[in-house]
Image (cartoon, rainbow, N blue to C red):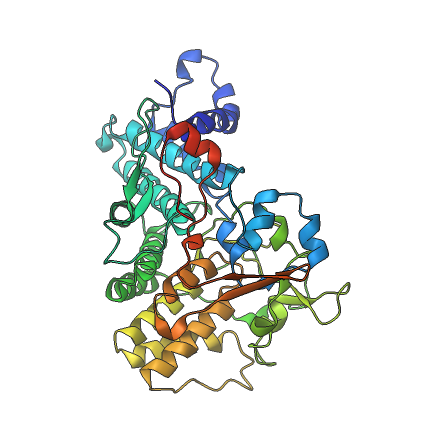
Length: 451
């Protein structure tokens, strides 16, 4: 049978990423993973499980801009034309292939576990089971956030979702589920993760229970199910609510925010993308100017460009890296999820408490003035503005644009200018679902996103 390209490519990469572990086996009969210890080794492959997630959404979003000379110098055709929303076909496979590799490894772990006696080491078994479900949910959500149209409850049954590979077997053809089934599967996986993950996890790349609550809160926010987004954000913060106080950071440092800091619930980074690099991406003026002079984020997140006076580059990575955007889960994001969901469900008091808790840790205490706005519409606008200001280059802006464009109050037309030519992305455009790589379409036969 002709295999889908999704898994043809994955097998090659998986063989490479697991080769060091397999080469340690003196007995060739041990080359096929089949024990609980093997499952743990697969989960501990940080490069396979925690890195390489799609950046296409961030490349297409509005938190930065490129000048014409830098845009022309980009060597990656797909990223270059994703920037101005003019891509007509996708040649680069990694944005699709990498997260499906995570799905494949998660499926392999779940398959192995299904044949093991959990009572031999129930604690380790359940922790591994929960982690595999978590990684599959996280990867599916990353794919859906880029390659499908935004979730709307009224149309999700008829809208195309993603292929839901739920088995490591390679001998069945991929097909696209509908969007409702896609998000149902993500929710189910996260709920399994919540059930089985431990409250405390000492390995830095592995999720604990709070991370699963956070992941599900993020999903429900994208689904505009604000009651559930609030509930799961609340469950997360009841387990872990630590925040960095930005006044304690060295704002003058080239990368001020430490990796694996106390806010990080789950670390994950995306593919390196030149358009988002410090030498290319200039922060959008409206975003930079939205920070008060006494807001520590203005100097922690940004630095002036010496080569282009009056413009700024981003340096506030939660991975302490200048090359790969952080797309993982943090308590600061969860505070904003709970704050927004509280305001949208008429719990104004909780929304104000969460917003002010975050801002107390971001603004010079001498000049901090608590937000006291009680009008739900005005307060929601403040929360959404703070969400954009807090989560710069954290993989959330594209999802927020997709979601907020469904509300007439927050419609936004994005604009780019390259070499004197203007480009626009209208609210709710079909281009909010990025094109699936052509090779995937030709080999698997799944339908392409519409244009």
